Length: 118
Image (cartoon, rainbow, N blue to C red; front, side, top):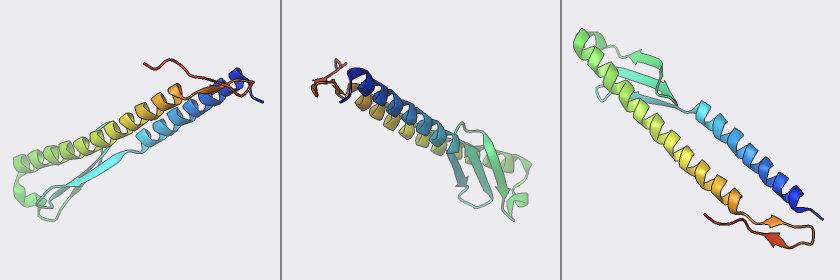
């Protein structure tokens, strides 16, 4: 038989595992976007920091200002994709954490204790 404390510790372990999984997923987020004309590809991490930049064979024909603008726009689009991925993970994490927090705990006699719902 499990005590209320055992049940609570099991919940805490599940919450810890969920936090660790969330951290691992957030650390692994990246997004790569290529401009419509194919001249620029930019890759960013989950924080939006550029981790890769590739220029197509015709990129040098754009001129410095146009190329710089295209790089910034493409990197910005990649950052938006990464941000959307991170937001999705955050929403999923919050929902699962809330479900864990509201799950009934088992008492030693097999009965259950339900935390207050907020």
